[in-house]
Length: 321
Image (spheres, one colour):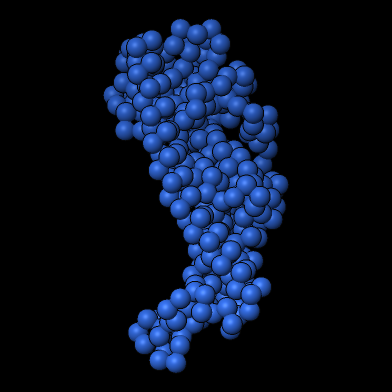
């Protein structure tokens, strides 16, 4: 039953669970804990899929008369029967495919994202200009390292985004500086610097790779979309602590129509209305955050303890036989 149980858990964590969690509104009052819960769900889904494959492998290589695993997969056809044997082989092959696709996706996403960022960073360094260190609108962040990473583009449309990485950049337009007050500019810069400090881009890369690894007929974009929103909420919270909710809300509305290049994290976007409403709503909840952390731990620990221990014990017996 271990293989079946792991398969069911993996399918639940890939489809129904993300769909339910994506529709939940409480996550907006505990964004950090909600991101941890999403990470736990994604990790548990991957581990459950791999565990199902390993459990099936232990069924295909059952111990022979000498206590050692049988030499070939086909030798178990008579024991299992053709239908069950074919099912085991298909699921095991699917598990291997997911593992290979996950490794390839992690490498491809990392390389492609960094290549795009490096190219765009070169462009903004060539086309943009640096704001002088004594300018009043960067006094809220006097760090030389962060000030040197600020680039201003001669664009009339208000926009603001950041390019994460070792040589990070925060990019704003002339339209942003002319449309916003000093406090609102401080809020938008704090939002982008929060992305860079917390390396939110790495969280998005993980979910992008997991999304690409699973087959299309079982995966869903719910996790990726929900985590994108939660990451923006985390940056919003950091900006609120710097400039307050009202200046940030005005800055978000001004930059709502802007679009950032792929690989960047923009202040505006399709979730602007939701984010502005949240700024005027209830504050973050410690109780919801605590419940989310406990749930995240349970998602990882309970299936592992309940399902993994029996077949791990049997696998150890087979190896040491």
